[in-house]
Amino acid sequence: MKRIKGWAAVSDFDGTITLRDVGDHILLHYGFADRKTIEASYSLRVRVEDFMRRAFSRVGLSEKAIADFVIKKVKARPGFAAFAPFCAGAGVPLEIVSGGVDLYAGPFLRKHGVKVRSFFGRARLVGGGIKITYPFLRRSELSSFKASRVLRFRKAGYKVVFFGDGPNDLKAAKLAHKVYAAGRLYRLCRERGIPVSRLTDFEKAARFLAAELGLPGRR
Ligand SMILES: [Mg+2]
Image (tube, rainbow, N blue to C red; front, side, top):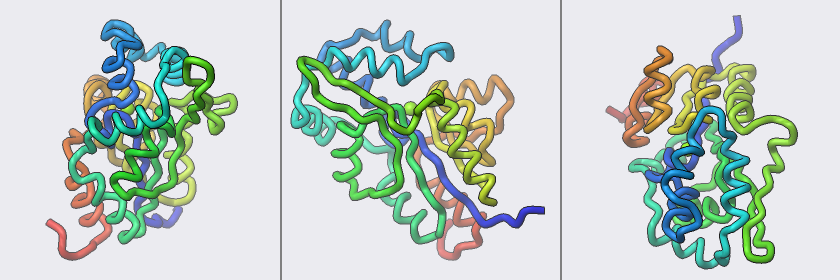
């Protein structure tokens, strides 16, 4: 039998680490998409990466405008800023895997002083829009890529805690040992009988991991 090394954590970004999906928030706030279009993008049949590429190709905003928006408007889920250093101290590798883009994730993570391994789309301003590429995807879909990150830790001997909120997180959630989910993912897990805890804040997950790892001083 494979020896368990401990726990690893894999997290989605939009709507998971942030309280609202930042991409949707920007598209709606500046009128580049309406609610119906956003809602349709959450079908299990839609690839988030295709939606993002299409929607942002029309976004005529500067890098600074996006950074300012993120710093003023985007709220972190409670406990996240402390969760990353907790993981580092507890020897829990933490990764962020996202269909979102560096253009808004960068300013957010810098604001909260969080530096962890992460996978985001690469956004570049071209003409009157934003061109998004996903260098880490190559031929795979985002949802399969997220699942592959969970699987990679499992194969290395870790138990994996996964955090997510969207339909494109479902494949990864199925492979995790512990799932914290918000929004649509919570509902999908419940409907499919996948054991799931509601993601309200990251403090709860830190307490869970501390108990699993036998770390003192947390309740
Ligand atoms: Mg999300």
